Length: 214
Image 1 (cartoon, rainbow, N blue to C red):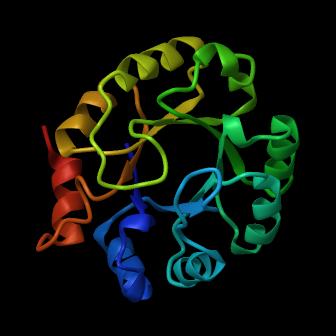
Image 2: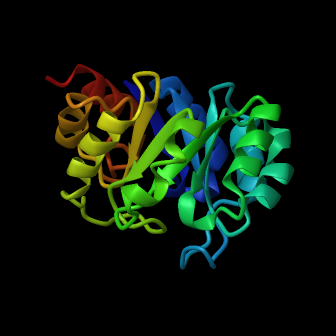
């Protein structure tokens, strides 16, 4: 089980302090949502935020590009040495060009599948990606409800990808939902406001509870 903290849910005014606290709490990495206000109707973490996170941890960064023309963003974010780039199928001008650039930078490419994305549209692309991120909410905003129909999509993706493909999920993940999805083969979990960034609950308490829950 790989637990990555969704930094769009962090307190941006205390980004350094929260990065250090999350690192000490035992997360496996940091999930950084970059939004352009065009591909999704929101703006999120920018270059300065990525820098602030990267300067205060040695844990892996996975950058989720909710943007048009993601290759442009990859080129200026590469200085922060991310471990993963997640791309949305609908945003890719040339999927193979993005995959090739990521691999030349020694970054693992991940394909994002939205709740409304047809698996038939992405089936031929799946073998090109090391990771698949399945959105269990509509991308762009925190605080949504989990979309239960995405569980069947996760099962279908597991059937048509290789054993080496790592499945991640992102959106409205309670501790109970994390373990339900873990039991059907999900590897990575993006932790946000449903289970990690909770008022009056320490990060250490939440991470410990997730890792020990049965």
